[in-house]
Length: 137
Image (cartoon, rainbow, N blue to C red; front, side, top):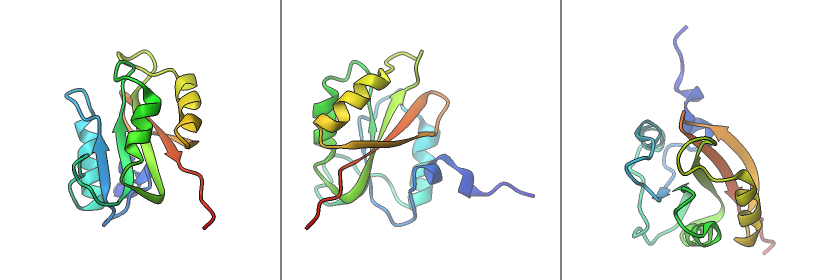
């Protein structure tokens, strides 16, 4: 039996072909394998902060020294469509720049987000899914 792509990290993030994924906080330390897997899964390049249109999800790379996490999360909401998710990617505990999970738990509600799940997507990075509460409209 051959392995299927269904078990890939981008699939664990819930990404599907045709989705528009915005990537924020990219730097030399980000996981290129994960980036390629995401782009292969959605069959497109990720877009950056200059995109200016609605996006289905945001991949936010964040390190402890990147500034105020609440501000980073609020900025990440700029182009996100209702019901979309922010995947906050932080260095795993014990790695340089790791972010205390308590800080994420504290910052998410201040940015108007709920923390839903975490996913194993990379040997060096932890992924936390944050969503804006559904609005009744």
